Length: 168
Ligand SMILES: [Zn+2]
Image 1 (cartoon, rainbow, N blue to C red):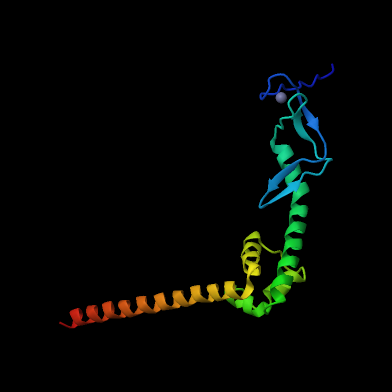
Image 2 (cartoon, rainbow, N blue to C red):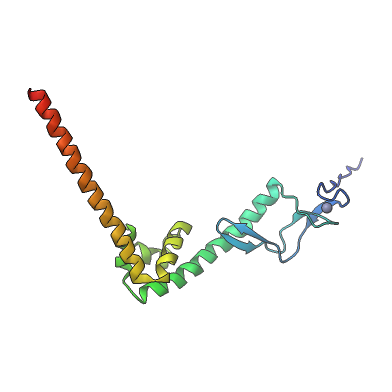
């Protein structure tokens, strides 16, 4: 007895049949970056309207294919941004501004640690205008220090008041 495979009909156009299809030029946003799905990856696609019907297995295959490309793209961005920044300031200066441990930026640059999209976006903004941006960040931390000082003073006053109340 042969098992006949049912080809599902497209819910988009109601005409076509949805079959696995592989082709070049399909771009999707993977995490933060739009990337091309490798042409060998099959996605259930309507043969009439071209609608793509993602299922769990396809999504997993796409993730597996795109993760290394994504990392590669992050690395390329990293190299470009770090080059821009270090042409104008030291890595240490940037590490201090961003609260990173000493040597972290070179660790990533040398491939011993993976850069996060979050850190790359911060560095990308800094690279646009290195010294002014770093000064803005310094200013932010100074404001944090001033606020903490104020809070501690008012807390100390409160504690003194409580002590007076307890002594009375
Ligand atoms: Zn269709």
